Image 1 (cartoon, helix red, strand yellow):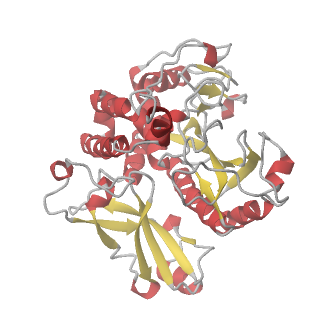
Image 2: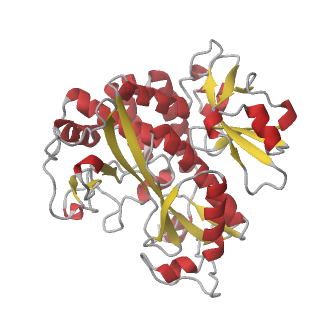
Length: 445
């Protein structure tokens, strides 16, 4: 690999965006003049960035979790993540960093390090997880008033979408200028987009990323979300990855296709030599069914996330599974044995991709380790079955804390920090009086 200093000079880079994803998947970091950036020295930032809530606050028990001196952690660049920033005015590069504690060990609060930790569990068995994410998002008119409902933007025809246009090419073409820039910006950053479609909601789009290793795909999803938001702003509209941004419209998901390859044989671990499903396939499914409800605050991380999980809106209400069944939380797409995979449809688009991918891999791993048997495949509609998913962030935070196998796997320090952040966000939400309460309770109760 070309040395970073030479690469920066080759591209006449003026500035480096040195970034790291926080608990919410927000890019934190520093802007550093290229001539001052040192790959060997890295950079330092306070560990407290991992305790910052999405509102910019800190949990009440912050001092119990963080060192009393709020000392710095060392951030080292992963050179495989270096990219040009295509929308920057001056030549700018970005580098995603890994976090290390003062003693040089990986920082156990860092989402990227957590994903590496989970992937190491598979590496110990000489297995390689393969991931392929699907991301949904909405394009909306600019909205500077938080009390005002979101609306679809004006398309090139001069009109707003007024009905759902699933898979419509003409509906996608309404936003051609935005879509073309998304493709161009992604190409400039080596973000491998497979397909783009119009989803069910008004001005809702979906992009599939090409399959690959978990860390690489998490990096791509992290950068893709930022790229789409930046592209939309340059067209005077917003792009949102909220799980449920519009009342009466479907939510936006982060579907995770996953399989496991044996590094020695190259065989898909989910299929026997005769093509039938393997024991590991069923145990992995059993792990997802057993542990995803306990880990749900990592896949539905915001108070808004739970509004998405409603029947007949392309979102699951349980974790039943079936072959090519989009009404279940776990779907097995049609594929040949070598490409057999499981699609986790639970996560919303508002996730931190590192944590969502780490979570689904961790739950599947526990299933294989404990040889958990799944339920029988469902051949009817999952919406006709009982709703069995947790319905609030408060409930899921407590369930993660109480699930010892997941606490042991993810780490007590990480679980304590993450749940404290989410508990603080939920408490902040409860202080807000909504327009619904003013509309229906102000003069009627």
